[in-house]
Amino acid sequence: MTTFYLNSINMKTNFIQKKLKFIFILYSIFSFSISSFAQEDEDGDTTKHEKVQQLKIAYITSELNLTSTEAEKFWPIYNEMNSKLKSTRKEKKKIIQELNEKSELLKDEDIKKKLNSIFDSEIAEVNITKEYNFKIAAIIGYKKSAKLLNLEQEFRRELLKRLKENNRQGNNQRQGQGQRSIKR
Image 1: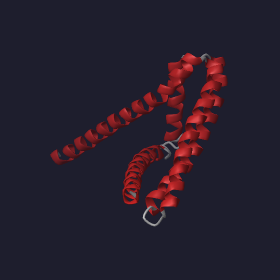
Image 2: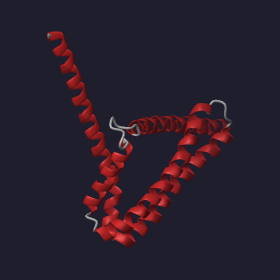
Image 3: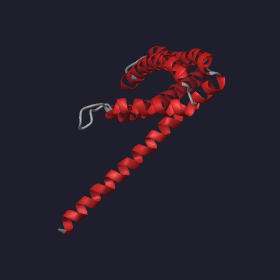
């Protein structure tokens, strides 16, 4: 009976470790793509990250149809929420990275603690979102607040779509330049 129980725990631990590795890889890819935005443009005026933030602000303001009064009250609270979420996600990422790098060296009890920390971070994210959703709803109403939950994902999808299109266009232009130089 105890062998079955231990095997079951080992299988669950392996499954969780594989899932964490997958989440970490996805998170790393997303972080890398976002960090590539953070480099300055050729003119040095604003960073790509700042431009993305400006696009996000314009997109959300437009899609929620915020009045200037609503926007004035909404954005400080929204930014505060994002700051707290970013901090929580950063801590979670750190724990996931530790698990991925040291999982073979850690005892089951240590892994269990780290997994609990990850799950606690996820709960904290939900609680932060819930808390601020009510604060935001008090400013812009529940319909707009509910719509906001999907707008961030829509914005990311649209941004990634545009990046892919730009990369394809850039690759096509580079290929075209290579063909021109061969013809000359």
